[in-house]
Length: 359
Image (cartoon, rainbow, N blue to C red):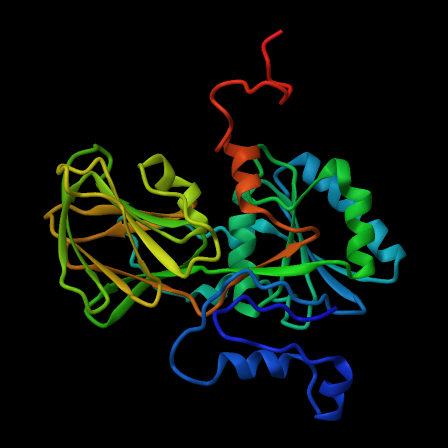
């Protein structure tokens, strides 16, 4: 299988014989493209050859769901029968949780979510659960570059690659190595006080900052890279990745962004100005949010982690050098996902001959 790299620059794939003759293992070619400079590479859709043969794979399970537990037993039996070692962990390891307002925050670093039994040599990890489980699994695997195959046992399954009805065929593809990898950018969200890093987490969807427990207008001073700071008066602000553009940011009126775009999105929540609209900008620009309000604010990351942000704190958001790597079993067409999951692009009026005429 050849390498495919979606960039603006011409790039010729090398065959395995050429790589062996030059003492390369295939990854050297990709690393040489990325370079050793300080700039962070883009993370477009990046199909890659699977790593044969599979011998040790991960299994991340939402062990609070009976269906996920039963499915995990089936997967373990099937893969072990094929001669593989299955390393099973709970998705709870990727749940950071919320810090108590009186708790002294101490940043453990986002690599603390990586299971001790996982390592970068694992070709992939299967994930059983809903979208919340996928968000947790991303924190557990992205720092070590392990691709994840998401199998939905939840509800919407927007981030799911496969479903239980197709499980037998899915496992056949895994064993045969018939899959590719798509990389999506993640964010690093840090709470800073002076030079002290008080709290930090890896984020796939978004960071939301707002007042609680009562909703009311706040002021935010936001600095985006080298650009002049902006002031926003709103109930809150959302900083999201392209993947997160179909989550909270979408509900707040932000645009949908295709996952291969190297951008971030700033979306006000109930802005108190007709001029305050969602802003899309390069993900090479770090973002600093200063809460210009005397009360403490609540920060929520991916809907399952967060802490209080005090007036003397600032929130730093930047693109992570560790993308999440999704296993793809077939061509992943993003517009079709939007159509199937969110009803995007469906015809408003039945067209003759398309099977949608009223009976």
